[in-house]
Image (cartoon, rainbow, N blue to C red):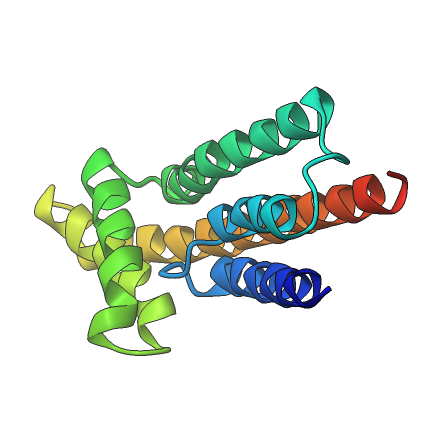
Length: 163
């Protein structure tokens, strides 16, 4: 009985970490939610999960990883960004929160895209436009992650309740 309580506590914590990862990209996000299924299985039971459950959840995780990059890159490209600005935005989103806690979540991709674009010879106005595009991509990507990760959690709950 105690192991089940611990299991549920860990599942809830991993779900919370996963959802926090949609906003704070340093946290593991979908991986934490996926790990919660193994915690549930080890502490309670793997019985509710079949091939369909694992196939659906794995597909969502794959889509999340691909969409996270593609949607962010789309924002930069939509506003006229180059490959260098996409790379700069990606680097900025990774290191921004470490360099400038909290504000780095926004400033990292913005400045990264701007620096990347200016390295290709673009003027400041174009770099600012591309930097804005990186923020559009970031917010769109975050929305996609929230929806898909909530879907992962809801599917888990439905599978467990109907088991």
